[in-house]
Length: 440
Image 1 (cartoon, rainbow, N blue to C red):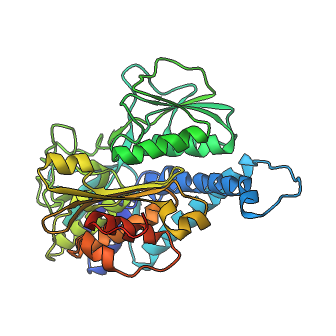
Image 2: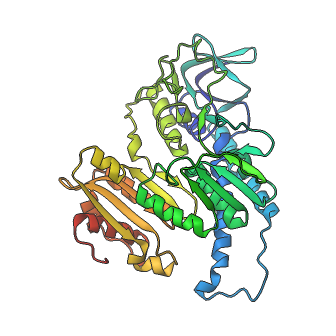
Image 3: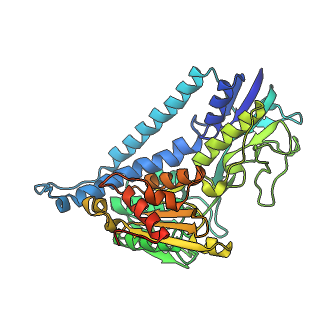
């Protein structure tokens, strides 16, 4: 068969790219060898947040009496089987929604392993499907073993960790980045005895140190046994979860036959329009440089097909993409940390405000959260923002939007925020950076 655009992979990068290609008038097909929705919808982002939400509800119930709500002695029971069923229902609902969008946009779904031909068409089995204008590679990533620890037995990856049908009594998580922190936080709150290993000196090592410090304190309050600056050397537990990095899923795609070059790190080399070294082939998401985030992949997919359609596009500023970790406490950030800003030679100004400085922090029972803004003093530029605490993953977006609309922390300081809301802590952090903090 012949298509204008063939997208390989139906995850959040692939399915968005396919829908946008169809909107632009291209006859479009998606190749998927497994489940519609890819790893994110079926094994990672969505099931993770489903289990994390159950853990969040449990935590709220446990602290209900702090808000004047008594349970009248009723036993608190974690029905992990029901949590698992809810997770499966959420997955089927959302993947079914993607399938519905494919039908609505007249996108063909081709099943099997895609292999590029030398002419950059797509071969599935013995059938070659011609791509008249573009092929978009969106196959994501696969798990990577540790040098001295491979998968098998009770050693599993993050996908399997979120798919457990029984609540384990004990769990070891190797890697305290976003994925490892989410797994440890979820299972510890649900009642599992969790040990979290991190080879670097702090949890969430890519976040600002002030944020990592608060996250560590609250991890310990949840009962997580955190071991930083420590390599895993064997630890008996029901499950050992490797959450210490992944690699691009490029095996079997036939990249060499199509003349597609890789970076030294094994990622696919692309330009600002996501075009590879073959002019008809684009690559997005975890296959290419930049943060391995679903929302980054989606935007890259839109850029790729718009370029293929002849539209003007602009490269992504990867530093300005919001980063979100849904552990408890929530952690979110974008841009430069304080240390990175100083190393880059900026005249750095910092505004720090705890949630407890605004009324909502006390009302909602989170006074330990923190908003930290990093700016450049000369022009009031917003260089980065870092938030730890309730709803941090929602609060960060305001600051991302301000930067992309070419505003600075001085503008945020004078934008009226609703009262009483946690967003007032964002405003106050901007005022702190500007030198006139009110509530502090």
